[in-house]
Length: 300
Image (cartoon, rainbow, N blue to C red; front, side):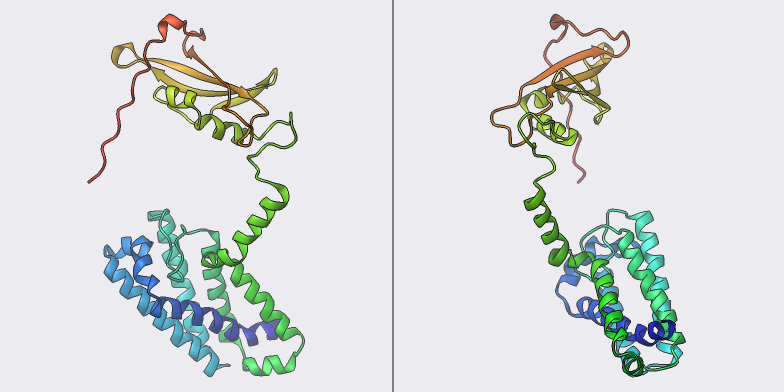
């Protein structure tokens, strides 16, 4: 198995690097994606990031060609391992300094750096080491193991396919759509009278008129929830009033625990304000016009 892995590693890496290198070097999406990558922040220039991405694509294509044409020699594998180590270092920087940015690993990705990016870079590093240790060409490895070789290549391709975020539209999104068609949307109610998930109640609340009215008072995400006599109680913290009259309060919403997005009609929502210091509900006469929350200025 070890000889099969080292023998076919150059072929697997050549396929991966040939694909990602061609996309980086020749795709029009490279210039469009470059400003969204951590590389643009590192270089402080979208144009320089585009140039580096295209140059990296050229390096990947050269490595792919050398892995195919010059097998059983350590130089192409060692260079590939070095490239994988560089990818890991870059991904670490991106995750630390710009976690919301994409890595630009294939120039078509527009998702933040995740464990899949690290796993793929790690496989490039490990594959490069394996290719450097190979003592036979990849075609010899295929010839010696005519049954196991294609299986190994197919499994490797599936793993790399699953680790490529820009290919999700070909398998992951259809899989999710199929799951929704078969099992239904997780935020929709089930059988009549069956309680919906808490996330469904929160979504229903946040799209209600009651939430719009109380939103200026609310200052937190959901803090606690419980069910009581068919109602789902949602607890938030907030601040009522302004200036010296401001007081901390708990904002309590109550909704039907069985109501979801597919429930006909507008949801019935009860709202209460409880003084956070005394635990006493605020009387109706104390609830004057809800203060408006000042909008934050936009950065120019």
